[in-house]
Length: 433
Image 1: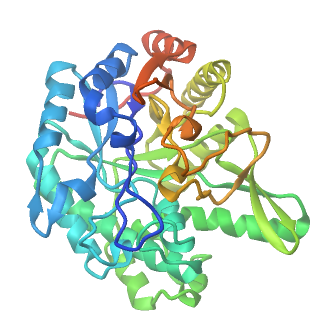
Image 2: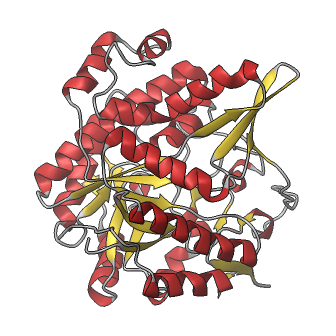
């Protein structure tokens, strides 16, 4: 990666359920018609001023059975992106889903070795074409959906389920990093995690908010070997099913990464805890750029790593999105000018995507409430995708009479392109190959 990276991402969540699950396949490339329009979509990223693209490898579809990989579709797309368009690809190897033949998903005892085999095979296959690799997107979000709340495979619940999934993920990332670097010595590891910002509306909930923020850092603490008996959450992990031997093993195999990717959404990431009828609820609370600045600084302080803003956007009108383009990039510019080692900025997603509730028959699958957001009724009774479209892209998806989804660039897209052309943050440089 050369200079400061202007990056666009195409929402690539790829979760295929096991038999009997309460969901249909959640394949954003298919739902947004990217599989049909990928050439035009990649050209659009280039034309909007991006020099790099975060792009999903769709593990459930590539790793068809143990030891068998089908790379053809990725080879065609990566070759076009890199050699025809001049984009750098940051490959997103795992985005919430695992192959359906891996029965225990992230909690399967074979998961760390299976995902390492996949990551190493990917790195060997695409060395020189795709050298920037994210082993797994957002461990803490994966653990919430797959281990705490039972939404996606392996559909575990409770903090013991969260712990089982998180330990598997941490071991898997460690083994994947080793496999990638063994296969491609020039590889750059971009570890991507969601920001965790919690506040409480009463003093009684303040410790709970602190604990949730600490849990938000646990996956990265685990994979970097920081969870020793002196760690604040060591005893908590033991109480929730981790063994001392497992934690010791993670310390012995501590991983390093080249860049730390920080994901932050101003209207979704910051949460305020409230108590209603004895139940604690999380309410998304917009902190605008303050939350972004605090997140980036906090990650740099904790892990002493160069940072890339790997996801940010906001849901709302074209005007709101345009304001966030300017506000967030200005915040990154100020961070860099103040000495923060920020190497890139990503708007995610480049175009609108389909809400995850679509695959669950309209059932809300989020863990938080969003204030002051009016959402059209979402129901499985209609084949229309319009009620499920999340208006977070620089480019709007508009459903046509025949059901297809057209791409309509917004004023926010123009503002991103202008920023990418004219305003590289000072003090930021992205080394690479």
